Length: 146
Image (cartoon, rainbow, N blue to C red; front, top):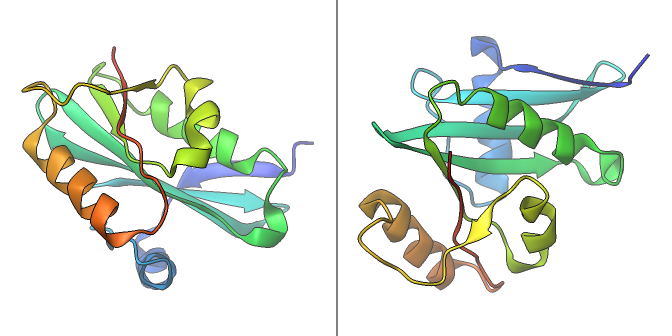
């Protein structure tokens, strides 16, 4: 049996989810507006990710986190696959990962956006600029077109 299980977050977990995100300096989640995925390894919650609606054509995949002791087990991979499969209407999925994760997201057909054009939703572009100023790591702007 696979020890990794990805499921939709339960409402009673929102405090734990947002406490985790605040410790990481991530934006907190809104349970009623987002699809939040919780990863469990042998029944223990160990990772998070979310899909946030931006507008009628776009979503943002973000809030990716796996507890350090559970890394290198395929958990992040399983979370991303789960989130991508939630995109039932084939919207564009935007992602703002740290630079060292570029190859990881390319496995899921995310492409780096090098030309910042009118096609980047304002909310995504604003968050990208905020991330670039806030984090001392390189931040990428990626999109998976559907």
